[in-house]
Every structure is written in structure tokens, then in C-alpha cells.
Image (cartoon, rainbow, N blue to C red; front, side, top):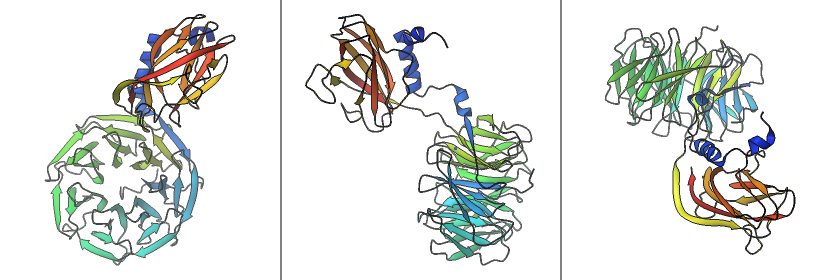
Amino acid sequence: MRDDRQTGTCQKDFADRRRLPLFSLVVILVLLASGLASPAAAQVITEFPITTPNSGPFGITGGPDGNLWFTEKDVNKIGRMTPAGVVTGEFPVLTPNAEGPRLICTGPDGNLWFTEQGANNIGRITPSGTVTEFPVPTAASGPGGIVAGPDGKIWFTEIDGNKIGRITTAGMITEFTIPTASSGVRDITAGPDGKLWFCERDANQIGTISTSGTFHEYPIPTTGAAPGSITAGSDGNLWFTEEFVNTVGQITTAGVIHEFPGLSPGSAGFAITGGSDGNLWETEQNLSKVAQITTAGAISEFDTPTPNSLPRGVCSGPDGNIWFVEREFNKVARLTIPKTTTFFTITPCRVADTRGPAGPYGAPSLAAHADRSFVIVGQCGIPADAVSVSFNFTVTNSSAGGDLRVFPGGATLPLVSTINWSAGQTRANNAVGGLGAAGDITVHVDQPSGTVDLIIDVNGYFK
């Protein structure tokens, strides 16, 4: 295992299954649509290999272009990956150095900014891959953590220089000396109070600096906690890792510190970030786990698929999932956060009736063995960000007995029916169904021959 440390900041029979009782089908669909997934759903971790072997990924962030950007410390590159896990670029850093790029963040100028600890530079890379470097004035300062500040500038830590640095988007650097000598400063983040908050790992303190350069420092109650990474939480507080004591720390903007036990012994928390679910997420480098911490301090841990993967940098990705790098096995990993939804009622409204005039929501009648799609978004007040809809389906004028299968546009034909009927029978049933990428549903008619008319009403949606 590498010894470098934190320096900064997601079958049964076909006919039987098709005719699953409608009540059961509706319950299943409602559970899926409302995001009531089982706890195990939060453990879905997918790993994606990095193109360059032994690249030593270290830091990661969500980019302004909707991609993930990560540092490749051992090969002196910056990598770019889509949320689908495809590496679309690896860009060499200009200054060759064994201590390559470490941490990375998105700047206010729409570029990515990163630290080069060994080369003593702050780097900038555009979304198209053009790299520029700016030397830090203090020699061998060891830039580590980096973050966009509330003042439109980039702020970074100097591990060996014991300073906090500030750089404008034009490359002008100002440095501020930390009051405590040899503090071992590591990560830095922007707080909800307009200040920058940072970890003093060797001094066992959390520090703040205002945008004008005023410092405050707060000792951690537990001796030897070794704070290394810090992030702002959804509760208005700051949260930080405590590498040597298997706890997670929280500090209010007034400087009051709470510590929460619950991490596995020897976990060695490395990096922490806030998630789209309102929780905190932390990588545990020694145990190859990712921990979820609620703002009440409850902790759950999930194993990475590859043992001994040495998870390091972590971020909330553009897709709302948690992303982290696995330094030992040259991978980027995504932990999928189950999406929660809220139900909104609307006045019952008719979307389609195939008995009406010809058109996308009218005639002709549905034909046996055929599919037909209906765009639901934009009709009856269903918004573009709806993910599923509460329907009432009515069939009538059938020339033969059959059933209807309804599914999101572009999805695979399901094995369960939404509604069954006999020849000439009129029947209606409720169901909650998901929408396709175009905000549409597809209906498939299982009927030996002839046609049937369909009426689609809606009364609410989930988003």
C-alpha cells in the first residue's frame, strides 16, 4: 500500500408473470416511483478502469462540463471521465515531477484548478484540456488542498510552507501564514459563513481564514485525531475526517466541535464530501470502504467491490451520485445514490383517447401485437422533470380478449400486464408508471387479432 497521505479535498412461466395481479403491480410501481428502495440500494458501487496503467488517481471533482475530472498523480496527468464511466481524455501536466497533481476543484471561471505538490505550482486546465501553471512564491511550499472561494478566487493550502494561498483566475498569488507553526495544513473548503475552513492535521486543529486574511483556530477535543479533509454539510456546519481515531468531526461556524464514533477500527478516513442526498460521504482508505454519515451522526459503511483498492479523493458528481478514486487499482468508482421523489396531485385530466380524431393522442385504435407511444410530459400539467405518473387506463371496443403492457419509452417490454380484458369488455385500472427519456410511455397490445381503444387519464406525478 502506498504511504502518501491526505492533502486535500459518486423465471417463472411467461404467461403467469404477465398476468401478475394488478394490485401487486401497482404497489411495485409505486414503490419504485417513490424511491422507496431497500437500504442495500445505497451500496451499488460500479468501478471504471483508467486508460493509463498505474496512474495513481488521487483527487476528483465534478466539472463544469458535466464530466468527472481527476488527478493521476503517478503519471503526471489530469483525467476526464463521463458520468457513464468512459475516459475521454488524459492531459499531461506541463512540469514533470514524481509528486504529480494532487487535488482538483472547479473554479469560478469555468476551468479546473489543481495543486502540484512536488512541482510547487497551481495548475489550471480548461474543459478542452489546455494546461497552464502558476508557480507558488514560497519555495517548496507543497500545495495540497484547493477550493473555489466565495470571493471569486481560488484558495489552497501549503503543507510544507504552513500557509494558505489565494490565486486569482488571472494567476496572481497572495499567501497568508498560519498562526500555529508546523500545523501540517491539509484540505480546505468554503464555509457557509463566507470564510475558508481548513484542517491542521499535525496541530490537531480546524482553522478558518476570512477572505481578507484573518485567522481563527479551534483545537479538536480528541488528542491525535489527525483531521485531513473537510467539507460543508447540508446542515450549515463543517464536517471533517479524523484519520487516527475512527470518528467523524463536525464543527459549527461558531467553532463548537462534535465528534461521532461509528467507523470501523483502523478505517483511516481519507476524504469527505457532501452528497446530493444531504448526507456526508467519506472514503476509508485502509479498509476499502465508503461511509455514509447523516447530519445526526449516524454512520453506515459500504465495501468497495475490489478489496484493498485504497479509495482516496471523493466528490458529488454532476449526476448526483458519489464518485471516488481507487488509487491502488487504477480505477474511478461511482456509488449510486437512490433517487427520492415527491408526489404531486393534479386535477384528473385526459391525455389520450383513441376514439377521437386522428392524431398523436387520438385515433387510430390500437392494433393487435403492435406498440404505440404517447408523450406524457407537457400534457395535462405534467412537467419536464417528472419521472413517473399516476395513470388510469381504460380499454373499450375490443374485438378480442387480450391485455395491455405499459412501459417507459425506450425500455424493454415487461413481462407483466397493466390491464386485461375479454372481447367487447370495457375495463379500467390504475397504475403508476415511469417515463422514458422523451417523457413518454409505450403501450403494447397482446391480442390475437383486431383492435382495441385506449383512454389514458392522469391524476398526479412524481419528481
